[in-house]
Length: 197
Image 1 (cartoon, rainbow, N blue to C red):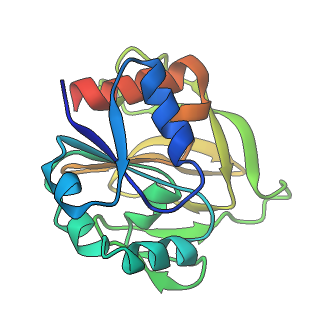
Image 2 (image 1 turned 180 degrees about the horizontal axis):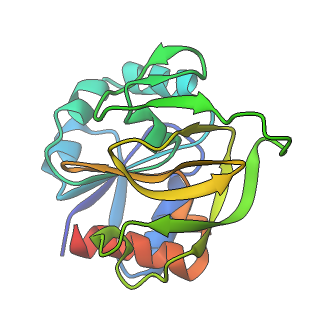
Image 3 (image 1 turned 135 degrees about the horizontal axis):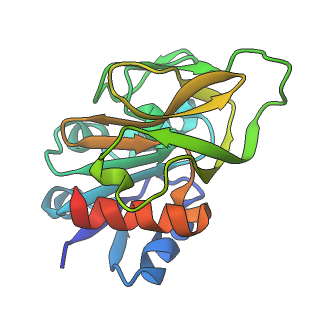
């Protein structure tokens, strides 16, 4: 069985991600221990809150280099995905730069921000992260900032404009939605990450 580590970013959704994996019978440990992170088979990088606070937490915990140098598959969730890009307009700061792209405020389309609730996701056909998930399935979102579609986009969602619902580059994947709060489809996605990626 894979050795799964949820990187302890000090953000609020850590335990809900762990509980979601527990429900699937997947053992995972929340840790900020650099050796455990390096030894893990798979990593999850959850995040909620602001990019600035999360980057500061990572800096204080000496986690930035270990995340940047990770070679195993890593899944960023919500803010965790945004931190994987080069830059966030939320606080105007450089982020982890694991892949190209930048996080921007969702454009004003006369829709309330944050974008909150269930929305349809359209993914790239045959992507292993979305195996056995119906096209246009609903996932749960809570965010005001987003990564607009780019070369690393593997799934999109529409909220006035299309934005990246999921990104993938080399060993690094990210989802803007909360799979741990997205019912059956979210559970399947977490299972796919652990078993297929």
